[in-house]
Length: 313
Image (cartoon, rainbow, N blue to C red; front, side, top):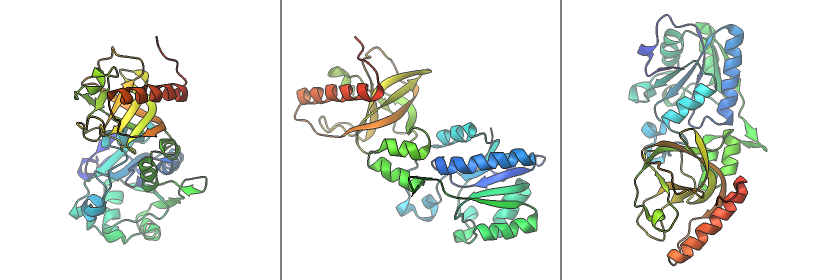
């Protein structure tokens, strides 16, 4: 997949395109529906597919007080768009200059001059341009002027509920990783480097891999989850613990993962992926180490059952 970080990077002789525009801040079922229609339309018209997206959520600039943490990071986003079959991405820096573009200027400079768009496909309720002045009707009018067609794709829904990044974030805040995964169309994940921690888990017989705070992926509700850890091409059953260490009160909010029945793994400085399958219990403070060990063993028994794995000798 080709990646451009500005319109100046787009070759002047790049093929005519089918384009979609959006934050793609989750690449969830709604986004995947949009991308599937983009790919199909491009194949029929012999066009290259381009996703126009942004280096940050617009709220980071326009409404910083209400800006939320992203569901996925830039590397995860690139990987998911590649998996969806996108030919190229144009990631625009969302700054004052971009935010101030009128709908007409946005279309002319980006869609027409830079990308030579012939088909533009957007999600239901799409807005663009300065203060969201442009809508789908505006886009269609501009398309008629500049020679591209416009298609609007309806929201995806599950059990009558609209799929959105906001809703997925809400269910993750509730710890409902199973519902979040259904809305994403894949299991929710964190990806990052394993860093050295205080090694508290090792001292009580449950070594954990601490994911760097720079890891990508939204952290769900504090608690314990059944899941998988991927490293070096291998998949390991794991218990993921999100939050601070309420018993030892020494670790800031993060996610640490214990690979079931393995004490021989050296994951330090490796890039790993943590996949969430099911919520086990909320975080809790224990009276001491003995109570903590009992709770961990109970957690691991539940996780083995959820994941369908047996205890290793």
